[in-house]
Amino acid sequence: MKLKISFFFRSLKIVLGIFFVSVLPVIGFSAQDCTEASLLQKPGTWKEGMKGSTTGIPADVLLKEKKVIAAIHKLMKQSYSPQGLDALYSEAYDRLTPEMSLGQYYYGLYLMPYSCVGNIAKPDEETNTSVFIKANNPEIPFSREVVGDEIDEQDKAHYGWLKITPVPQEGIWYLGEQEQSSGMGVKVKHYQWLITYDQTLPFQYVTRKEYLEKSIDLLQKVKQRELKKIETDYAADTQSRDRFYAGTKKYYEDKLSGVEKAAKSLSPADLQQTAIVPAQGDFTGFLNEGERFAVILVKENPDYYNMKLAKGIPQLFSIVFEVDDQRPALAQAYADVMKALDFAALKNMLGK
Image 1 (tube, helix red, strand yellow):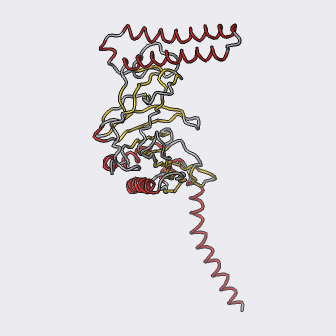
Image 2: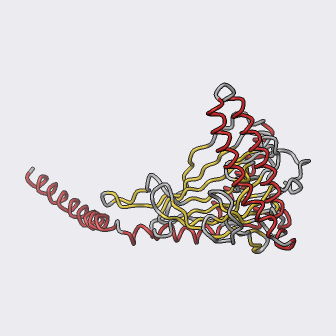
Image 3: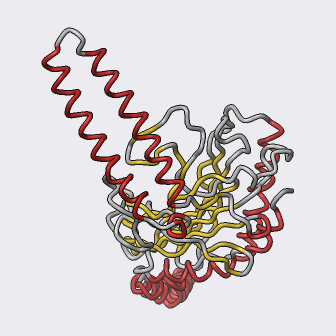
């Protein structure tokens, strides 16, 4: 009996010895392993994110859009292996409206970098670095606003603004790099590209002449509308009517004066140049690209889109990449994702 017990304890000591020899180094290694350097070496994973609502989208249109999204995801997943972060992918679909009758939809990739939490590498819960591939959305704000916040409700021409003139680059359009503030209080780099038919653009540049003529016409209409409203609203209060009438009349006449002065002072050649105007405040003269608050005025090009194609078929892609390049994992991810983006394959999807 003593022999059996002694043998048992000797066996237990051997097993425990093997355990500690095997496990303790691992424990010690993991306790020291989570560093900024080690995070960069940690292989990431692809994770499925939220899917947008598909309510109100016809089934045949949605089927086409989902096939395009699936093809984009396949391209990305085959070419990009996340490192030091998780790649959270998502998709979204917009309802068809008279203004967006082609069907706009998006593939999003959120890059969630790892951080050390109690010596364990965990992905951050939020990020300011993302890539969006948007079908049939040039990612340019269009509206009927031409002069400040003045709007002609009857005007169907949609105008938009650019900060940077698109540059042709190997069959696509590069809309430049900008520094922007993210919602997380950090400056991020903003990059944008347009993939279009035959390197054409879905918009046209507005000339100074068109801008000035449109502005004069619009300001005169708005002036008359506002003066008529004052006469109606203050019909029983002549003192207030006269005061508001005089102030409003002067306000719009001052605005018109600046625009009319510019129209008379420019040569025919100058008037044919692209209109670059201040994004804020009243018009005080044309600006140069790159000046503070300067925006390049464009308008939609209705001839770009083939309206005979079925809804949901991509006719252009815009790619928007925002990156916090101060974090090493995100800076590396930008380089890796750019290598993975297959612009030629995306261009080949247009019209199909």
